[in-house]
Image (cartoon, rainbow, N blue to C red; front, side, top):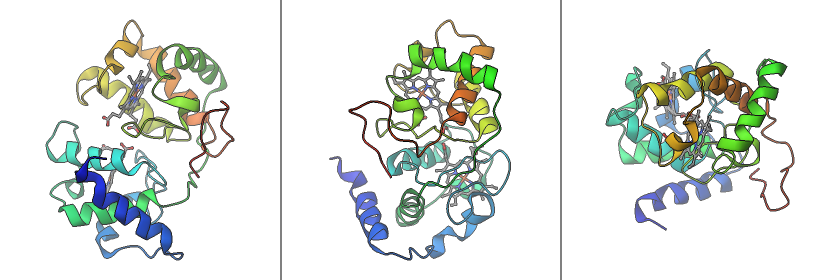
Length: 199
Ligand code: HEC
Ligand code: HEC
């Protein structure tokens, strides 16, 4: 366990223990776009209800050091305590994102590409991941489409080896994978016997 993440885990443990889970005061600037529960309150905003805490911390750090572009001022300059409080809050929410509208033909096309290229790291149809990667199942399709292309354009830095997974894929292939991820029910039972359910 790396020590920088210990505070997040403590906050997580604490928020899970408090049944009513009142929103921490530090959440106020986030609510306009992410809502109280992390279900997006505006178009184009990602759902972060029940998202992995470490992934959210990494994202906020990447916004602050500009290795991931964001025009939202509220994402930057957060103190460690504020970051722990807001991330701990959203990570502790039960996943309740609405089903996005997706195109069945794109979903079918995306599934094949997903199985060949993306499943190693975004496991169980995007319901599971290693802790560095986010939960993708049921994510907003427009958000996913933009992010999928952002890696390719260099607006977002590829994580280790994801660039290999992209090799030779067209933009249309990648957009089909966005539809595949968005169409998955994040709360469906795990497909693989070994996969663990998170919530
Ligand atoms: C004005 C709207 C807005 C506000 C306010 C806002 N966000 Fe965001 N947030 C976004 C958008 C849009 C994105 C997608 C990345 C981007 O374009 O900036 C995002 C991305 C994120 C991500 C990365 C999610 C992912 O799936 O990669 C996290 C974590 C996050 N926001 C947390 C917060 C927190 C915590 C606050 C409050 C301190 C906050 N945001 C305030 C709009 C907002
Ligand atoms: C070697 C592991 C690996 C493979 C293979 C991989 N990814 Fe990823 N992916 C990651 C990690 C780690 C992250 C988190 C990156 C970050 O924080 O910037 C990520 C993040 C993403 C995101 C951002 C999601 C969000 O909520 O913002 C998208 C979109 C994505 N991957 C798409 C794909 C697609 C499409 C494929 C297959 C063509 C793929 N990935 C293959 C590891 C991988």
